[in-house]
Length: 232
Length: 232
Image 1 (cartoon, each protein chain N blue to C red):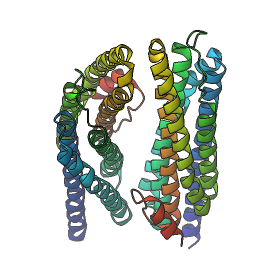
Image 2 (cartoon, each protein chain N blue to C red):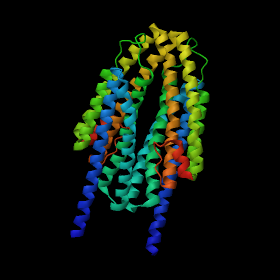
Image 3 (tube, each protein chain N blue to C red):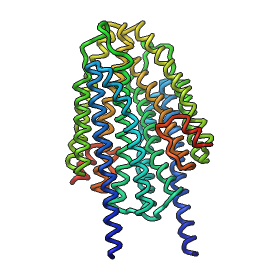
Image 4 (spheres, rainbow over the protein chains, first blue to last red):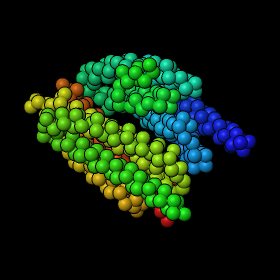
């Protein structure tokens, strides 16, 4: 009995430590995305280089958290909610790592094709990027508290991001048509916009994992209604 | 002892069944991608609609395999290589599902913006798509046999796919500049091309999981050299 409690106490410490690592990784990814946005908007090549340089930290965290999850499964044989937490974590870090890649890609765009005076135009990715960073911040917050209501709220924010994205693309398309010589540069901006829009989808994935952990229901691919149903 | 053997025998049956489901899912995804390519190239709206209609099958398989993996972990408490196999499967099906999404997106392009005579131009995505389908086929084959040498070979094919993709993009960009009124349609084709290029990255991920399972080494984010090292 004593031993059982001891093992279970130790187990909780280990689980808690993994969860903390996920939040640290999330914080780093959020910072990377935020820096990448600044680098693009302010043409700050040094900051862009820092984002590229730090990408390996995000990658290393993904690998080490994955390893910790596998180790805890093998050693502690978790079941039910503990196991769901580990599964949710394994999936969450994949999405976080990919959001980290988006930051790196944006940083490369800032480094490789700085907009010269001739190619500058009046579409800023800043509002779109701000929305994506805010969505990531909120989903990490929901993850930290394992708050399903908050997760469901964040899930719905993606609609707004999609609309912002579409508006940006329409505007960029107009610029392309008006002045075809800008096409190569505008395409770079479009790729970035699309990558940012994908951040929203990845945040939605994390919302689904939170609901899976708390409610034990897999709501992937089922849309908003199934999330509302799961919360009822 | 007898019981032990019985349990282990039953466990192997369950693991084998999950593995078979992954291969079935892989086969379905390969078919979806292949049909989507045909739908785009032959302007076959009916086939495109079939791809869209069947996407839910891919999604359902992802969810059910994930569930089976969680169940087997809770019930059988696998360790070492068995656990690595389950981890590899959990990650593989995420990538397969996303490749399925690529097929669906291409199908939507075929449905929503069929190239009319005026917007037709001479860039076909067929060779690029064929390369992607071939890469997926080979990685599924490597997965079926858990063949690390084959996985390492497939991994290297992505370079070729990237080069084909870049050539397609360059050509499409030229068309955009020559005739800006085609820009909206050409952009659709570009998004498809980019999605197909990403299929290669996802196949590379699956190669990494195969190596992780067989060799017990996580080679993600480390590049080709680390794969060669792991195989030595």
